[in-house]
Length: 82
Image (cartoon, rainbow, N blue to C red; front, top):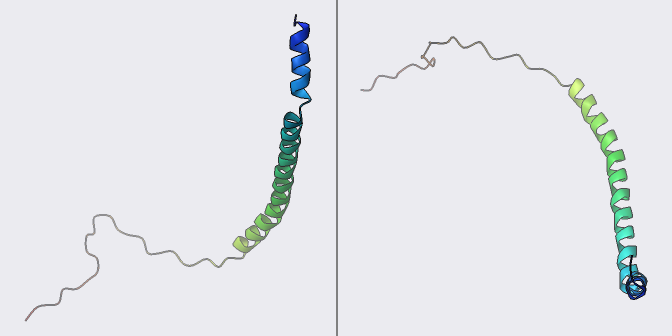
């Protein structure tokens, strides 16, 4: 399928120090990203649990009075000039 020259060249490229260095750097980078994602995910769970508890104990304020549709009066009185 491949000639001997192509196989030798492929072996030289794969074992070159540049390809090996880039491979090691990529493995380290992916490991770091996975570690940070796990740490943030763990701390995010406890944070969201604390937020849910705060919301449950929140004091509810009375609702605003219902607005009658068609009533254009804003409840303001005009002050006569003069």
